[in-house]
Structure formats: C-alpha cells, structure tokens
Length: 154
Image 1 (spheres, rainbow, N blue to C red):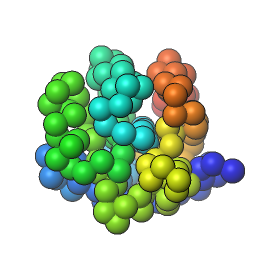
Image 2 (spheres, rainbow, N blue to C red):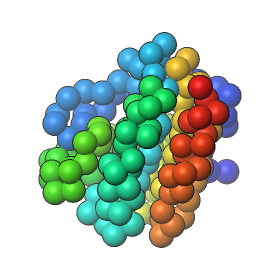
Image 3 (cartoon, rainbow, N blue to C red):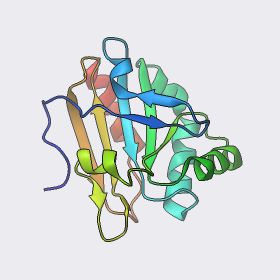
C-alpha cells in the first residue's frame, strides 16, 4: 500500500523552504487546512508543468484557508532556482536531509529513485489526514479533484 491511512494524525515535520525558512506542519493546526503535494524532481517536465498549474490556481486553493506545501528531495538552493525561474509563489520544502525522511513518514518515498512519489494529502485544521491520492510519475495531478476535496473539508 502506498501512503498513510486516512483519519489519523498527519506526521509532524519541520522542513526548510526555498528561502531557508523553517516550515512546521503543526504550526497550521487550528488555523488552516494544508494541501501537501509531494513531487519527484524540480525542473522535470511533469513537475514543472504541475507546479505552474498550482501557481496559476493558487488563489483558488487559498480561498479555503488552505496552505499549499510542495515537498521534494531537492536541495533548498535548487528549489529557490526552480521557484524563481517559474514564479512559484508558495512554499517548496526540501526533504533533502535526512534524505527523504518526511516522504518516508508519509509512505511515499521511492527507494529505487531516491525521491517522493507524486502524491497529495489534505490535512484538516485539526491535523488529521482527510484525503490522499497517489499518481504515477508521468501523470500530473488533477487539480480540479484537489479543489473539490478541499471544498468537502470546509
């Protein structure tokens, strides 16, 4: 089985974003739902298009008092270059070291490739895992489905 079972608490974590700032999942508890989007590699074809799609629809995600967090195992400086190149204006978190620790905690680390699977989780305001989807590496996420699931959370 890929991923974690729903209905339980999301594993807490603190990772650095593309600006070197710590982002802690539990800091959103009681305030915002969180969309966690694991993706394999910055600058790769599907990931670049997918992250641009999220950027273009970010206002739709934020309508639901949701924080959007992208997570890959790329180093922080690569994520900064990726964000700058594509105008990605939401946190991109580096699960670089210990390599893949958060991806493993969520059950979505690909040991053979050394990167997260293309997986999404929605965490409600109380820190509970409410929805997940796991796509193949070559298949982009369905953002309409993500937004529909966010509507169901509020």
